[in-house]
Image 1 (spheres, rainbow, N blue to C red):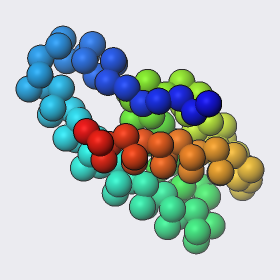
Image 2 (image 1 turned 180 degrees about the vertical axis):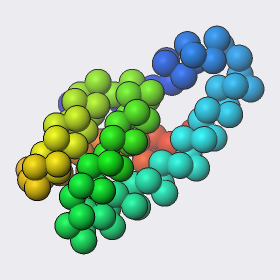
Image 3 (image 1 turned 30 degrees about the horizontal axis):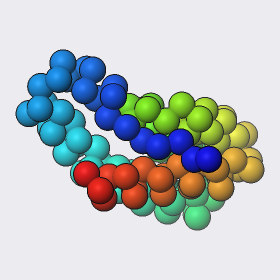
Length: 106
């Protein structure tokens, strides 16, 4: 079963302030698709070192959305890409799709 993104951490760091929660969600909804697209372009062009940097950035959003397994998958792929490998790609893409679907519902 795939883990579900959630807002628990965002609510915690926002101290329950609905305005701040919406601001943080807005930032993620704006930045995530851009970073996802950049990652895919870098990966497709086999620029694995820059792709690893994007995974590092995305890893923070994955963590903020409460995806522990997704965060672990991102960490593994980041390390693999730095070594010119990418066998964790499909698990990472699954996490990104999960987040994309979740953000579309917010």
